[in-house]
Image (cartoon, rainbow, N blue to C red; front, side, top):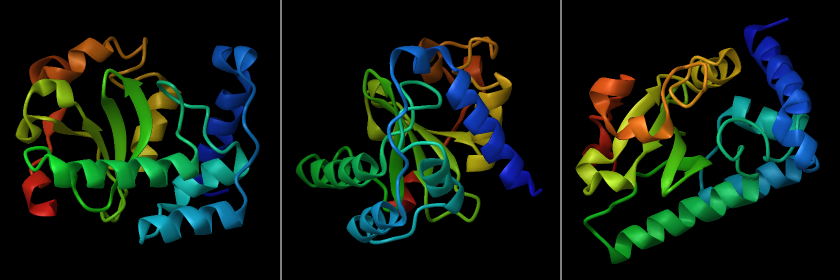
Length: 184
């Protein structure tokens, strides 16, 4: 069994046993046409591990924060963020960076679909300006997912950090995303 398969199995087990799922049942699985529709709307491919989660566990509704967004919502939120950036040029949205988890208060976990490892970024608009709103959450989607499952992520209770700490680089260890401006 590959590392990716093991990770998907761990995520499936966590999704089935989480306290959240006792209140809110998992949505149905995404089918290949849902993946194709989302990717067609985006104009680029989503990371295979992300689509595998949606096709094997549920089309969103599980995971950290308020759970992974459904594929349709990922595509719609990306389009909305890119459109809003045209109206507010001081808040540009980088190409190929899709929101995957809504943390609340405007904060989003995003996947850089143009990076080979599907880097995960934290968008924290409460910082006040776009140049200080982007942080590297994990160098890869697999590492981000592992940190959630292990309870070591900044947003995990076991990780010792809270969502309020996310805007303070020295407190949570998140580093600014240096490539932000080059990706607009």
